Length: 133
Ligand code: ZN
Image 1: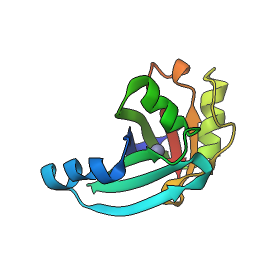
Image 2: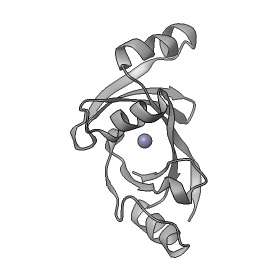
Image 3: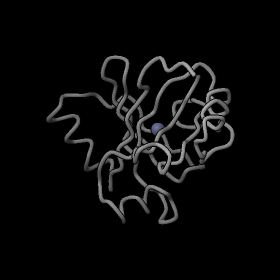
Image 4: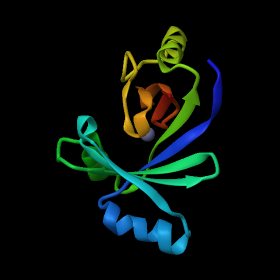
């Protein structure tokens, strides 16, 4: 597997409308997109810093994994996403190394990316997302 860069850092928030003020007014970043991913029951907001993005994740349903994360841990870093050439190949690659996958195959995520998550029990405590265009 060949990781080219950190694609984005996902941060779980209770409310994008509330949290974006910090990113915009304090950090001076610009939110260039808000996108709902119905599939994952989340609303996302994106900020770009150079090649890397910050993705705020707000649950749109109590069944959302983000809602469960917020309940358990509160607001904070939820996952790190690494850019790879082809997500399905990368997932196979890590699975062959004994890493349990949440997604056996890539699925459509925000920003039109193909994404797949690795199980955090196998990734030293950090939920890891692989993604490709
Ligand atoms: Zn993500």
